[in-house]
Length: 111
Image 1 (cartoon, rainbow, N blue to C red):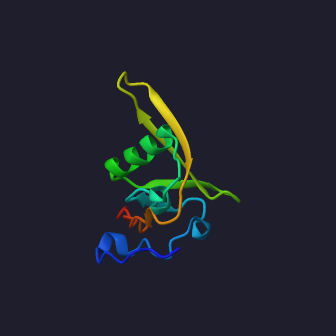
Image 2: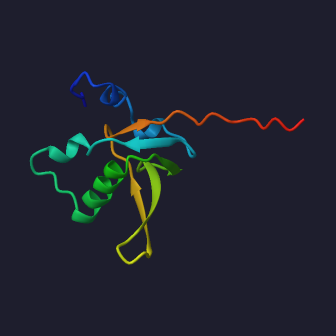
């Protein structure tokens, strides 16, 4: 599958990003809906679309929890309107995420 080159720096990293290249513990950020979802006749459950929209709007990275034959799984915990924690387990599709660089460690200067 070829991805259009939008010229945007955020979307430039999307090309060549496939879920099978991820490992458990990697951090990724979902930046758009998967391109295959806009294909004619492709149906996506409303709940799945809501979770992807939530991940995009939060603009926070998620950590890969499991990688299997289906793809890379993420675990997302968000509060609902009553404050209860709702847990979502979802796989990442091709072309919707970018890898987040690891955090820099701050060494304590206790000597």
